[in-house]
Amino acid sequence: MLNNTVALLGGETPAVGDYESIQTYTVGAGGQANITFTSIPSTYKHLQVRCFIFGSGLQYNITLNGDTGNNYSMHNLTGDGSSASAGNSINTNKILQNFLAPTSTSNPSPNITDILDYANTNKYKTVRSLNGTDSNGSGQITLVSGGYRSTSAITTVAINSGGTFTQYSHFALYGVK
Image 1 (cartoon, rainbow, N blue to C red):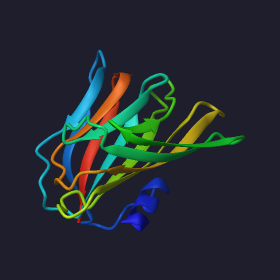
Image 2 (cartoon, rainbow, N blue to C red):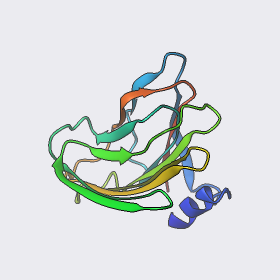
Image 3 (tube, one colour):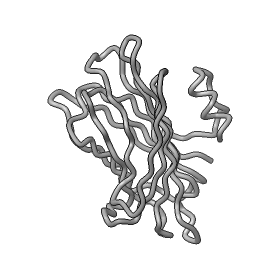
Image 4 (cartoon, rainbow, N blue to C red):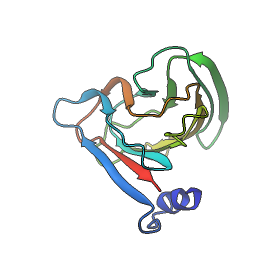
């Protein structure tokens, strides 16, 4: 799976049959604050969410199974080409994904988030994400590693903007074999 993720980020095509589209959503005129994937089948090994996000100054977050209790933890590493920063949060009610999206519809902020062993009811879930933005010479890249302290199978993934995802933002959920 990591090789396929690297291939995607490098513009290559992943191995045929490794990813199956489950749900997609494109934001319409007027924007939208939240995107929720529901009724996720338990027939895959992992889940992957791919986003191309338009907005301005958004810090969005992910919650799983509608759980907004303090059951999440995360570490993040962010770089902008001249400096780097790191942070962590424990016992929080979401997994925070940091980015500052440009307002241009020709330059979205991409994101790939993996939810590992999402259907395994014998362990907590691991979430990892890579996102970034380019604002014509400035921008940043953020790597997030998070945990969800629940053994329940994941059936719902919510992406909450803290603002508004603007028109043409695109979200896709894939099952990974």
